[in-house]
Image (cartoon, rainbow, N blue to C red; front, side, top):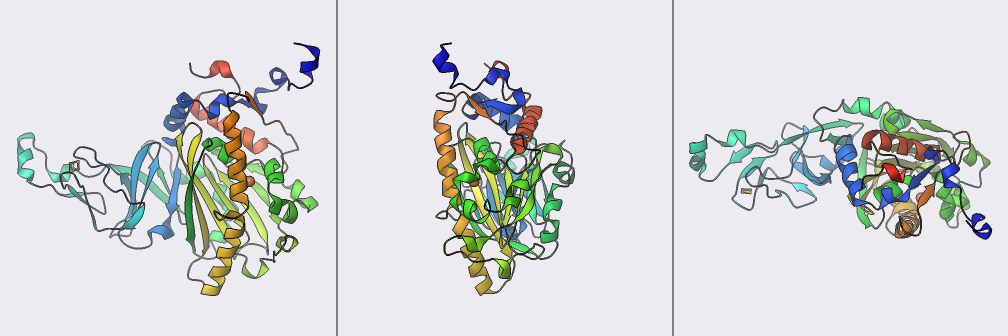
Length: 396
Ligand code: FES
Ligand SMILES: [Fe+2]
């Protein structure tokens, strides 16, 4: 290598393999397919909040690891998940993202299912007598579904350990909030991003990127305590960072959120929890934001954003919460568009102009240490059997 080139090169081969990743993991469709099989088909996946299925026969649809799912609160108040595909010849049964229905009728040959997923009608059923099939055998395939603290999770793997084992106690970070009042979703939007799902999740973990966010610089990073928070690792790749008091009054037009901070929190308190692989709970005093993702392809993901406040609160209070949410996280707020801009630009160079990504900051696991990202990729490696840093270990 010529002398004048060496100055510009990070000595990747001298780094521990835990401290960088091969950027092909963000753009290789073969790796995406392995992730779908080895991660998203195996873990407990957050799908929605119980408050979104408040009434009998309320339903939502979603997709996990490419499998379309129907989540329904039945007449017995139980929330069930089932594969959203007709038992007859596979037609996707429900197209709407959400709604309320006592029964679901397939448009193709009119097989009909109830809110528990039982097949309740087959037109001219007697035609199947020759093969001894009747509707009692034709229900929708049930998928494991468990809730905790008002959050609904599903798991495609019948052999997976229970949800609470998977969470490994990480939701205790928010127990004092969940335990005080009932929360409900007041905001939902989703966005397709031209970036890999892991890049989006990285923005929820590595806080070194907060230099990107002008509001964070003005209201959080001005406080020396900002840099001295510790990251805590839970089993199975979940991560939380110590809380911080945010100075909202320091931004232009900003005001303290003291009067409407969620019960259980200190005035203006910020908390953050990442649940492996794709979920973030981020609380900015008055609003809890929950992100989850439906990865679509290598370098393309659909992110769903929820905002939660106190169920049944006065209208005036709700309006304030909506304003607080929109300021940072609404589609036209500051932070989400900033993260989207950065991660979409990042995707443009992956595996082409940019071969590796550096995750080498060590600061005793404090705020801007890359520790949470490194932990994320260790869990990713455990489940996929791949080496994130080593191109030679990636499938041909
Ligand atoms: S595919 Fe649904 S009734 Fe035939
Ligand atoms: Fe961000």
